Image (cartoon, rainbow, N blue to C red; front, side, top):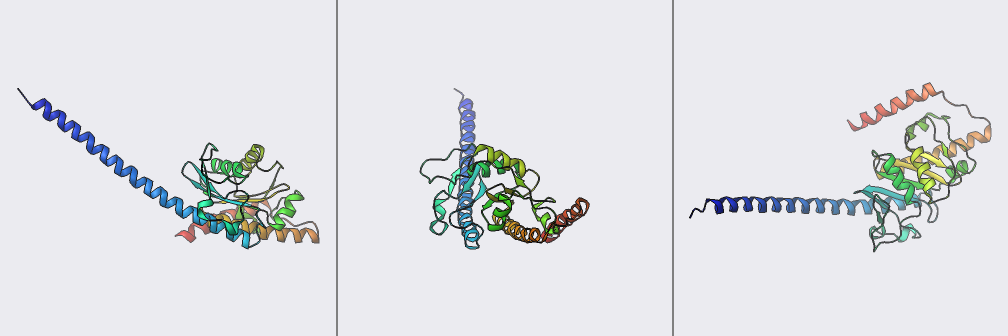
Length: 250
């Protein structure tokens, strides 16, 4: 009786087992990398939230911070003082808006964070503040025009005030997604400011820039009607900002 069939079958079985073994190792390696990334992001979110709060950008428990992760995001929890927050308190929200059991409740503003990531796949961090001068302008429904060339740091020639919508609502989420489609910072009427970035440090830095510009513009308005740079000039500035970013990375 020939054993060739058994030999061939055995080889085929061995081949499948080898592939399964490689797949398991690959999956284990990916899981380890993801866990490492999650730990780093959780710590960075806490550090960013603390820096935001301690600098005065968001008094008390106001504001929130998130970072893109996996198919969703990691975000600061609701109703927890930043000084009491640790990496384990950061909440994972899946791309469909679901929150796995065993976690704290996410910030009530999680819908617009998730909407921002969907609208801007090139951005990985969101910082939302209730900074003093940004809130003043937002409550007056005053956009920040090109009174200073640094307005271009937002990625556009102005920083607009988005229409009012109830906090935590789907309407606000869609409003924010639309507003951030072609820029990285906006004010939200009767609410505050939002800044997005490729990284958490970039988003936090932009949030600071928005507050500085808001304070400066508020003081300009106290003097009288502002002089505004032309759209043509702002396009030149925006082009220079893009070149500056590339040069800084080279």
